[in-house]
Image (tube, rainbow, N blue to C red; front, side, top):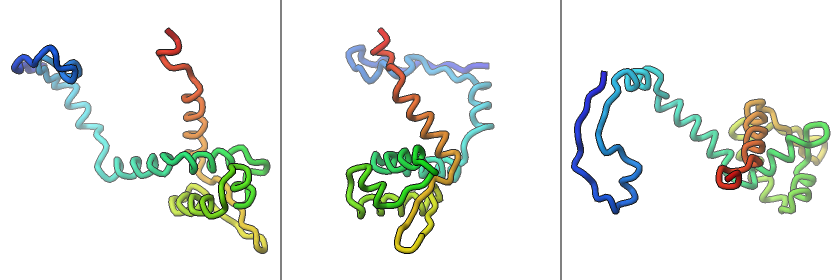
Length: 141
């Protein structure tokens, strides 16, 4: 079942209007399916928080370094040196990642080691790397 209504014709010279339906058609079965499976606000917020944790380039570099690290862990000094950043910057990013339970730390004497502990993050990193290395549609043409 569909319902239709015709909107006032927008100016054809307005490029923003190219992205809108020129005739409002509601497909009830589609709307019902969407509403049935809609993400709840709390779940959407958790997902948004996860992606915000992954949205910082330095944090992504830290996570990638931990992903490829021999033995699966690195100390702060090795991370900072390997990434060409200072210890304080790396320590701050690791603290954010630890607060979100993405990494864990262990201390051996005066050296602190970090390890990536969330397998979902590993999968997202691999998918992100694969996706960013694919040619864009513009490059293919």
